[in-house]
Length: 231
Image 1 (tube, helix red, strand yellow):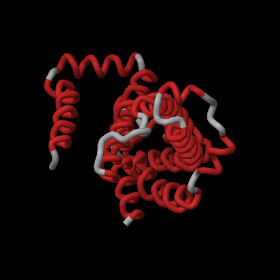
Image 2 (tube, rainbow, N blue to C red):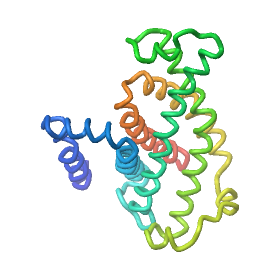
Image 3 (cartoon, rainbow, N blue to C red):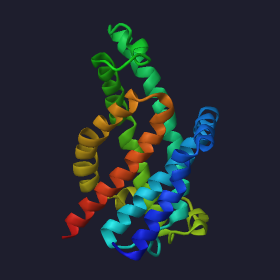
């Protein structure tokens, strides 16, 4: 382990440790999360998902930062995407149980407020499948387009806002073979569907945080995929 790795791990521990050791900080988090859910979603994804990409960069290229990576633009994009994810969580977690009841599954709404059961797992799985087939592909494509834009504009905040995203050009620059054969066909059914099934079993106040942590895990997994592809 290199010196930079030790410094990085130390900074992460210092940042998150107060939430576990100081009850006042933890209570502040709970209250603020309940009262300002969208803002907290932006903060969680802005920090944690960008952190996942930084870790992925370290695994893939051996450095935590490189020219053009664009930490600040990535934080801004993830903050915006995080609010969209929170919105999707609310829509699908409330709507799919109602739809299941419409199809004839009694108490699908109520079961999500009860203790863990096979019926609750089934409803959570249904929510996850619906969200990951309807929302996730659009979200993932939009995220890839913003990545391309950040790279094309030098990774700076000024560059990011210097011109609008060229959607046509960005669509052409996406590696659709990778996007379809790995991102869509493998990560959605094998990672996101089971992971989000667990997410929707959790209490509502923990779902967005857990989803943001999943982003960190996926960033690490994708970095190994990229490293393997290069080799």
